[in-house]
Length: 518
Image (cartoon, rainbow, N blue to C red; front, side, top):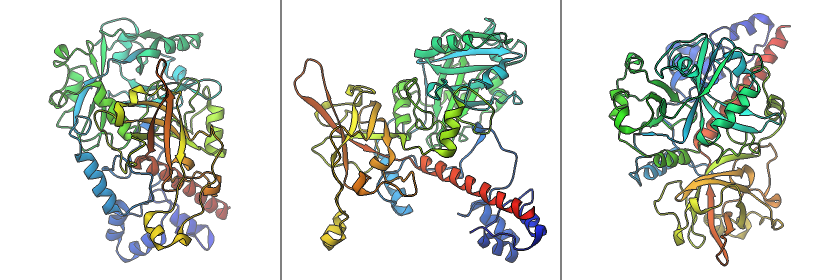
């Protein structure tokens, strides 16, 4: 509960000061009793007080906790101890490199080099995130997306603001930092790098910029991740070491707990020639494969590339671009802003990309998200499912939990009314083994409520015991193939939604204080 000033503008000014705009009554009593105890609780306790500060760029956001569970089930909330034990058992059940620390080249990722006096303004009007012009260090970078005029995602990208891009944009030495004005690398999926290049050239007009697709032999994209899931958990690797080796480093903060790092290494990605550029802290990591990186992404619900964010179809909010700090809702105009900002403030996001686990329809529904080599029963793997074609549909209605059923039929909720055939609960996007990503209707496939009234069981809302699955046909084979699909809501997803809700509530209360002062 937030305390409000009861008399006069002086009371409001006492609360709305530069260091502490809002305070709950519990923390207020603690502060009066012991200022030190209140400070400790404010920093480490469950009641977090956010100081008023200058809004930071989206890429600089950090979560409220350094250690975070990677994923959570869609079943009703469990106790923290039970959830912690379940996730520990899930993490320890597989010894793959995707669960530990590793580093791998990403040959499917390509770079564009952009430089020139008008480069920041040019990029600002085309991307969803705010362009950081003031930061010139090698760690400056952010996640963003390019939209079309209808607000649909064209390409998601990582931007690296670095002087090394000036030489690459001019076609010079890959390690050359010469050039005029601001410069950056734009990392996108290799299948769409030429399309993005044509799009940017179409918008160039008279802008004083240099734009070029970086050859594969000039710079290579590498991904590294840490076992504890923190992007700050690096072995001793001073920034000077990165600069001396001409390596561009960017902490990957899109998903808390992912522990990702991006490295741009001169000279391409062959392992035999890259060791001289990698700092010792990264070179000492165990070598993994792009498949390990893909599995780790899917386990954390991180979508990337046109296979998972279908070009001109996906919406940025449904693709979690906003939750991954890829949209700045305070910036000025850019292509596709109108629909995005309207959906944010007046609409409801009913679908989100979530991690899913495939299972045999004849077996039990899985309780936690974990990768199992070999796919599901019958040898079916996520790679076998047609991407973007197969719809996820309800295959079994929900019922009362077993504990309630033993107490009597009166405790059971009313059965859900069966929907007509063809009612889709989601769409399969991509997968590997028994895990993947799907665009899911939250209130149908999970316990998440996107509106105050929510969807009840009679209208097809989620109930414990509901089952969903995929069915598709294979050309040249008789019959259909099918697997069960279980959606999981990552904890980072829930936390960032709660952070946005709390931030919105604080702004409303602050506005009420300002009106009281007038």
